[in-house]
Image (cartoon, rainbow, N blue to C red; front, side, top):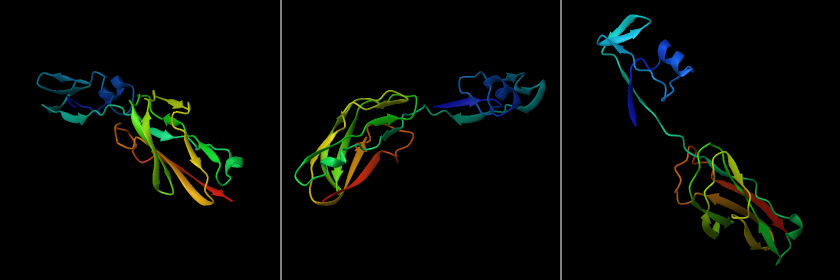
Length: 165
């Protein structure tokens, strides 16, 4: 969305917006007598600038992957769980998650929307793996189908390395 603002970075705009930049909701239009006035001075006839106003977007990121290390025994079922945190004040909408073991996808499913500035730790993103001897990397990834337009798309995965004797 583009808005045409007159003197968007000037003293009058900053005073009205209450910040050093522009508050898109602030009234910063000042066109008088066919020109831009600031403190009763005509700065430039027909002066204006365009700014792009970007709506806030959520930022989803996994919490730490939790598990019980005593369960890391060959053949035993090990529960891995990670929550989802939304770092921004805007809700996310629904999205899909995946689990990987050593880079191979082993789980896929839906996750419910995460409200703004909230962490969800309800088991909705847990995964059970049967332990295999060796060192393994388990990765939890969210919004894997890019259903949510986020402010940061680079922090959607978390991994943990475990060793099973």
